Amino acid sequence: MLLSRLPGTYVNLLIETIEEWGISSEEVLAHTHITFEDLQKTYWYVDSEVFIQLLEKSVRLTGNAAFPVLMANKMKVSHYGNVGIAATSSKNLDQALR
Image (cartoon, rainbow, N blue to C red; front, side):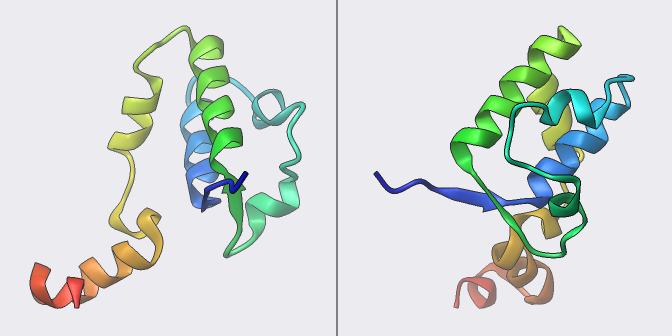
């Protein structure tokens, strides 16, 4: 089975957002393979299944079913990796797609 992977910046944003709720990154990352060294890397990836588990855990810990939406509202174009970079450096959508 081929797992899809997401940029680790998504995890960093999740951690940043949940810490605003007074919940520690240690509590969120417990029982995952993600290390604090990973969080410091410029480029790293996380399996999408692990990220979904982190989102679900964040919803449980905060008691807020809208937590993923709150996190998504903080996303910047640069969180989207190469696609975001193409979008921000292009004059228009056509140029970004090319």
